Structures are given as structure tokens and as C-alpha cells.
Image (spheres, rainbow, N blue to C red):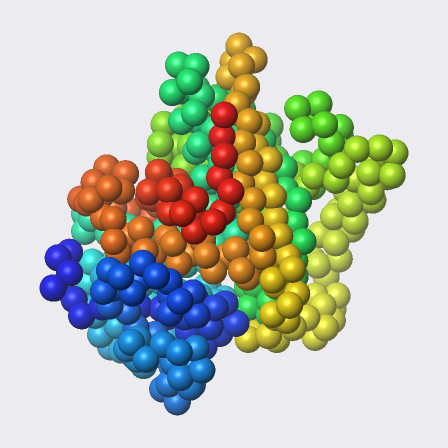
Length: 405
């Protein structure tokens, strides 16, 4: 897509939402955006709100496009106008499919912040083949769901190959996080449960091609019990985002040709000592209890009433005070190990997600020739398979710690 073929390099869809507003602020303040002359616009269903955001966040250079998620003609106009569409408008299972379909029709690359893996499965089934033919990269899960997991595993694999000449057969990631939830994220979670997608979410290889599933998928099931890990010198317990992130990493493993026996798992890192052991046990019991409780419609309805509404989220000070750290260990069949760390300051579900998805969109808009497999590559991809080393370099330049040795 030559730049002259479309009026905008990036269009931010859902710009008036909680994370959407942060993406507008991120691009408006981004020095590379200004220096490169990148043409961008904000989009949503309400022109008055979009223009208010444009003024409030000091983004006079951004165009304004009006498109309702149910208006196919307006979405076609939006997709025809954009080389890259960045969407923060969830729940994606309710509002996202027509936009992605429009992007594939008109050859516009696409990124979003979803963690709705059953919805992503549907995109793969309906749109992957055509996106391959169109050389269009459709890359969901470009927020904290699931870039640290996916890129961390990708780096473990590439580092093991470059340094030791062999593949990782096993990668584990352990997260330490400090932050809160916004209403849009919780609305997506509740919608998946209300739609009866719990069974699909339990499939460890939900996003894999049909011919890249192991004979015994149960061996890759989500962990429920705590344990002490010697590599990480810490007690580990179940991580609530693992049922999303692990599926994305396993799709990358299939698309990028990791070892046929490759195994990936991730956890919450709780630290050392007796008190941490007790905390890990409590976390495991609480995780199981929460899963059972959320399966009950009255409990789910109560949780929805108590949760922040879409468009609401943590305060600015709270988001600035958040942080995350991902520790990664890759192991080869002979026991050789590589170790890595991905970390950043700022609430992971909001500040980090904003940085991750914006840098993903900028990679597509500004560095198409440097992306994995070159310009003429497409499909419903993952961050690692669709963005690879380009995204790694961009995240480091944006101040995120991304290490592997």
C-alpha cells in the first residue's frame, strides 16, 4: 500500500473510550509521529465527542471520521481511508467483526487490544485465507493481552537458536503486576461468559491451525496448583490472563515453526518464603472458586453491577503508579536455558496496553518493508508472527525493558 493510495496512515477506532483516549494522547505526543509526517485520524460513532477529544488532547492534526460499528457503508469508508486501523472498541465479539471484515475487503492492516480468544478463533476461520491473499495483516491481542507473553517467548526462541544453535522445547513466563481494570476490559470478559464461551476458552490450542495440535492437548492445560520454581526462585500460582496469552503464544509457535514438542505456560510470581507459599495456595484456591462462581448467572450479574462501566477506569495517578514485570525462561532439550525480562512502569492494562498497541500500529504504518516475510505477507496473525523484531526494537525505543540472554 503506497502512502499516497490512502489519506490516512493510521485511524484510531473507538477513540472516545477509556483506552481509546489514551491512544489519542500517545500519538499526539509521539515525536516520531510528528517527525515522520504520519497522517492519522480518530474515529467513532459520535462526531461531537470525537471533536471534543481532539481539542482536549491537543490533537488538531488528527482527522475525524464518523462510523458506527453496525454501519457497513461507514466502516467501508473508514477502511478505504486507512492503511492501518487500530481498534480499542470492545467487546470485540459484539462490535469488532464488521470492522475487521471491512479491513480485509479494502486491504487495511489491523491491530486491536482484545483478549477475546473465541472471537479471534472466528476471525481465523472466516478471514485468514482471504487476508493471506490480500497481503493484509490482521493482528489481534496487541495489548498487555498478549504482547509480553508472545514477544517474550519469541525472543527466547530466537535467542536460543542464535546463541546455542537449538530450539526451545519449553518456555515459561512469570508475571508481577500492579494495576487495575477498566470497564471495557471487564465488559469483554463478562460478554464471553454470557455468550457461553467458557468451554471454548478452556481449549489450550483454540487458535492453532487444525494440523498443529498435539496428540494430548490436556498436557498443556491451564495450571491450578501452586509450586516453587527453582529457575525463578519463587512461588508461582495461576495467572488470570494465562488462558488468553497461552493460546496466542501457541498459535505463534505453530505459525513460526517452533519445536514440534514445544510447551508454553505462564504464572503469577509471588516471591519466596512461607508467607508467599501460603499466598500461592490461597491464589490457587481463589482462582478455582472464582471460575465456579462466575459460571453462575446471578453471581455474574452482581459482579457486573459492581464493576466499572465501559468508559471508566483507574485514575491517572493510579495508572502512572502501576507497573509490570515478566520473567521468561526458555529451555532446550539438553537443559540449556535462556533468561529474559520484559518490564515497564505504568498500569499494565492501560498505560502498557496503550504503548503496546500504538507501537504495533506504527510498526505496520512506518516499517512495512522490515516486517517478518516482507511487505507481501498477511493473515490473521499474532504479534510475534506479524511484527517480530520490528516491534521488539520499537518497544525498547519507547522505554520498555526488553531483555534476553
